[in-house]
Every structure is written in structure tokens, then in C-alpha cells.
Length: 517
Image (cartoon, rainbow, N blue to C red; front, side, top):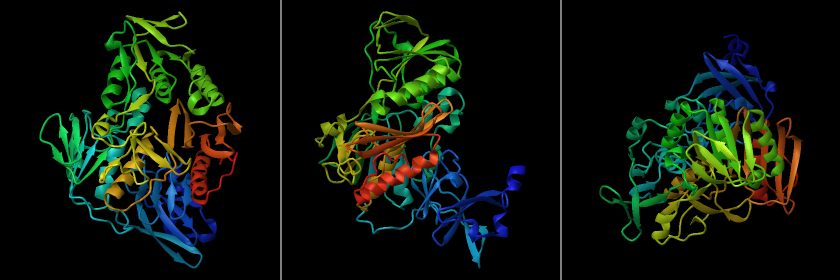
């Protein structure tokens, strides 16, 4: 291909002067695209694409001996290719680098690693691990346990009919019809068999017995555990709508939920989305992509106002309106009669079906009934351990002490849940690793991606660097002149730099107010 031929052949060597510290050079070796990376006086050669969504690592950020993907902030070791931070699942390839004078040559591809780089000495590993939940946190924990060569039994128990899936895609590309169904599972059944991870689907845990160290199931014998991870996640908040036909009202959480909406959309012309949340707006965008007329009903006066502020919310509203979405703000649904939807202001809308996205609530009943400490979620310490020794919690249901805000927080984001699962797994193995990752999420609205790092439940000032209307800016959220979070549009590298800055500020106790990147 012409583009490939235009890339330098790194096996012929390049001058070290062509690479600044922290710089990258996209080239090729044979048929492979390879990124040459300089970190200090060391030079590394790695695969060009992130193993999550194929993001361009040459456009990422070099932090020490790691590279972070610009799209969704996956992080890889430059030395081994290990995916050291979610959302990446798989290792990237590495090549041997040889330096002769001021020239650097990329030689043969190295064997792909499969296990984690040895770090701290582990404690006594439990004889078995039971994971309640088959979502982001549970799957990430199971995989991390095996990556660290844990050899005990692992059982993952999920009430869903499908194995762990790429949940963000359920409201984005899959729902829009631009992603194939076989892209959605994170792994195939053969992976769990090979990794000796027992995956129990369509199975509910009915009780946790802390004294006997076992969980009781709705079918089958109880399962004993040496260590337990509660990763039950959250469930959608259901609305009581007088007159509503349950067959016309949908919620989106599972693969089956998304499939049901896709099936309903195939024969429909109009849909109403209730809720101006990220899920609601992504559903609206996906249904518009499928050609349906879409009305969004939200009690807020600006979509996402509570999360991102009115200025950003109004910008997102304008994007959706430019694609034909009609908003009914400051309104609620008061009644449904067949296909007629009545709003609190008295207007009526026609809808072949309704999708509700008005938030979720954490699934904490099992933990609460077991007597674990609660705090508007399952309370965990900095190591993600609950009030019961050997019992951990991660993901949407867990509330932890966040070193960045100095508060206890609970976050309902996919990448955060994955990273919590990874940390919980390492702590199950005795690493005593604090969970100190800066929260991150992304949201898609047609062709615009919003990246958000940090956590700001409330703020007293917003600083905008750039133009919201041009979709090129960094939006910084501050409280008491301290930066809490940064949202970026069309500034992927700035989002990575903001993430690193927030990490540094926490480590050093400093904060640069008003800086967007």
C-alpha cells in the first residue's frame, strides 16, 4: 500500500536525533506497522495500534516506560507490551532495538508475553476466588489473576445470559448498527476454558455467608471461597409510567437489552428517549443513525447539566438538534396510551417504543444483607477491601476513598470498573496496592467524542480553553480554585496530559487552577 511504503523502514535504521525524549516515530518492519519510542536514553519498538479499539499509539503520550492510547487511555509497557492499565485487554507486540552510534535499528519481533511483569512479593494467595458479577470489574479481575499466574480456582457468577461484553458499545456502535454482534463479547467461551475461569451464566447469588466463606446460588451447590470479589454493578432506575405497555418500554444495561432495542428499531419509525443522560443521548444518536425520528424528554433544562454544566450541555443539545433530535426539556412523561406519550406540560408524542435512561442504582443488597459496611454503596478502603477481611468490592457498587478529591466517591464508568477489578485482583494476591487511578470515561455523539478525566460531583467554576462551538476545547472543573476534572473535545493528547497532571497533583499535593491540559 502506498501509505505503508511512505512510512520509513525501521529495519534500515534512523538517527537517534530524529527522536526527541518522549517522542514517537511511526514506521514499518516488513508488513508490520511499528512505533519507535524514545524514553530518556532508551529506545523501544512496539506495535502501532492499541489492542482495545485499534487506537494510534504513535499519537499517544509517553509516561516513563509506558505509552498511553489517545482514544481511551489504555496504557502499555514499552518494555514488554503488557496492558498495564485498562481498557486494553491484550499485549501489544514488541521488537528488539539495536543502537549503533547515533543510529537505531529495529530487528526481530520478540515473543509475545502472556504474564505480568514481576513486581512486589505476593502474600499468601487464597485457595480459590469467587467473583460475583460478569461485568467490567469482574472480568478484569479474573484476567489479572491469571496474568499474575494465580493457579487456584476462579469462579465468575453472572446473572446475565451472555458472558462479559464491551458494554459501552451497547449504546454506541452496536445499537447504531455499525458494529457487528460478534465484536461485542470481550472474549469467546474458549478463552475462559483455556484460562480455567469457570463462568456461571444465568445464575444469581442469593446470599453471602461470611462465616462459612461461601456464596449460595439460586441453583446448584454453594461455592466456597478463599477470597471474594463483589462486582455486582448497578441496575437501571425504572420509571412508573401510568398506562405503559411493558413491551413498549425498554432499558439498556445488558447485551439482551441492546438486542431487544435493535429488534424493535428495525420495524419502527419513531422513538422517545426519556432522560438526558449519557446513555439516553447515546441511544438517541444511535437511533437517529438508524433513521428513526427521536424525541428526548428530560426533566433537566439542559442535557448533562448536572454532570458537565449548562454550557457543555447546550453544546451537546445543539449537536443532536443538528441531526434531527427534538428535545422536550424541563418535562417528564406522565402517561402512555399505546403509542401516545403524554408529557407533564400537556403535549403528546407518538412513539413506536420508549427507551428510558434516567440513571442507575448500585446493586448492594447482597453486601448489605451479609452485614458489610455501607456508604451509599459498598464501603471499601484504599485497597478495595470491604469491612470483612478477604472480601473485596469493585465497580459501580463500590465507594472508595479517592485521593484526588479527598472524598469517598462512587463512579459508574466502564474503564474505572475495569481498573478497580485489576487492582482488586492484585490485592487478593497480597500486593497491597492502593487504588489511586484518575477516573476516565468517554462518550460518543455522532462523530464527536468527549473525553473526561477526574471527578467533579460539584464545582464552583468552569474554565473553557478553546471553542465549544468549534468542538475544539478543554473544559476544566474547579472547586475552591482546585482542578477536579477536565473534559476535552478534539484534544485527545490534552486529555492524556490532563490525566497525568491530575496524578502528579495528587502525588505532590499541588494543583494548577484553570489549566486545561
